[in-house]
Length: 416
Ligand code: HEM
View 1 (tube, rainbow, N blue to C red):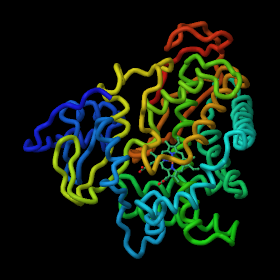
View 2: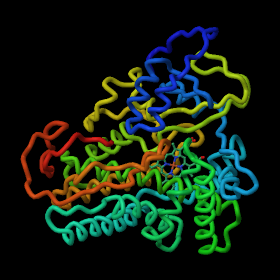
View 3: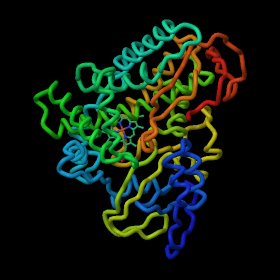
View 4: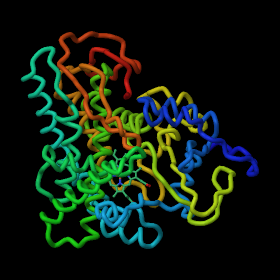
């Protein structure tokens, strides 16, 4: 890390201008907002709390035990949300360690060699669905890569990992998506009611399929299914968007290929699935040189931290050949995502299969994210079609590696 700048703690924290907050809540380029907020300060206030925008402050929030995770408050009518609030994600200290050891092991203890065959099988099926739909649609007609691949695939794979029957393309994926809307800033009471119901539906699916599970196990598996599916769907959507944008894909090849690993890392940095997390000061402390009273709420904006000029040069540029930087897309410290290896593997295998099995497909229109998605930035719609002409146009990010498939270039790499 570069040396930490000296700060005067008696200066008041700068406030986020109202117009930037409006742009953040209503616009479609959150990174432009983060850039402007970063120019105002490393930490800025807004009427509901603080935003921490730098890599340094986000890392402190994630790793220092004086900052604790805080669930959204839920009344007695919101049983689903109350139950989410009791999962490992919102526990601290010894309670958190026990919950994580007991319930996180279902994912984090699975070895990579153990997971790979099941990930490959499900990715192959999803890519087959995509190919069949593209062929059935015929030249020029578009299909939705979200509905065919990035939404169902993570649910199918988590169901396999948790020993649940398949429902990736049924109601389960919809409930998984809806239940995490509870974390969104813009969630209305009606949205919270939908999220609550969906969370209970996911919990019901898990408990009906394994009546031996206790309530803590059910709730923590609900967290894995609902949280893991929506975030991984965002990452796989970014992979598909990248592939459809005319970029050169690394050639298909053995697992762990460096070019693919770097590409996945750069997608996670540039277009992280989860844009922020929340912590509350458990005691009087400080952050970035500013005093923080016990109870202060801070949102750590990892999507901003990943472009922090103190962390890397030219953070707004998407460069798959970049030496990976220590981004916080999977968090850090005690709550570091136990599903990170699984999610990375899904993205890496999908890239491999797109390069190996799919003749060129291109974007057939602007991708869409849900209007309300400010925290988890997944895709709602990603229209793609078969490319008629394989042009040998200059790729966005330099020369193709030997044997790489070239795609017709139709737009910048990265994501909306
Ligand atoms: C690209 C995909 C994913 C991203 C970006 C992601 C991101 C994150 C982040 C940032 C955290 C930390 C939150 C915090 O500290 O407040 C987290 C925690 C967690 N993630 Fe993921 N995640 C992904 C996939 C998954 C998958 C596939 C699973 C499970 C199958 C999963 C299960 C969990 C659980 C259980 C926690 C809570 C861990 C704890 O509290 O100790 N995640 N994830």
